[in-house]
Length: 346
Image (cartoon, rainbow, N blue to C red; front, top):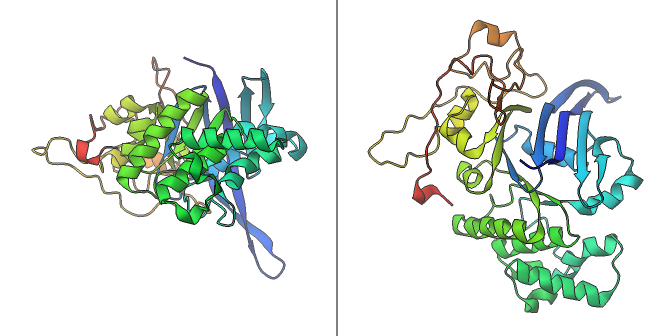
């Protein structure tokens, strides 16, 4: 088991709600509410959950695109041997670390500047971080293009000349241009066709070995999560409700919300009738979450105590790789899935 490269402790990100002529703060949207986990060096850690559960906000707060409301984010820089607390660093000291922590966004059509050539797009981070030798820049851009499956002849073209999958390859090359250690993939394949998704996922797997990368991979498609992730964290209403190795999570979930997500995965056996768990209601309003367990208004196993006592992300006895936030996880026998059907897999 490798050491962590990113440690997140009690992370919170609350956005103020301002009303009235004087824009007084009358409340807060709890987008991320007391989240803790770690990402080991060299692994792919997945975050999954419904839209609005706080996955992207968690990632952007880790990267300090947003300043956290509370909590700590620690980055262990294995190249320098130093440890940095990203959540409290001033901008001047944070800038040199930006090249170690990069991101690939969801939409390749909006994340690339349409007025810049491929060379300018990929080389921009290099220039920002002090590389001004045109020959070295051109050599590295060509190398990155070939690494992501494009050709050197593409270097002077503009983004409009490429398909969605090719644009995402350019976005990946841009993220790799400064040799990062940690890469956030924020729904980076969800805007692509399924066949193109497979190509990009396989590319990311190859690049992880080639460039010695660690990934935080955000997705809502469980087939994508199962294909690429080593461990998975399940988020609901800004909270982390379960963390487990991918195979363990799919085979035997410990939180009712995880079970409901897995029930949407089609059965591999056509003779087996799938039992879909349809949750009633909507994901809670992050500005006014319910008391106790945030999931209890929709949970089919909820008991009276669930509405008053908030569960913590606890570790079961004798299991060092699993964590869940359910008061009765030891008593419940939840259903998982053994495999994803081939026609639905990546």
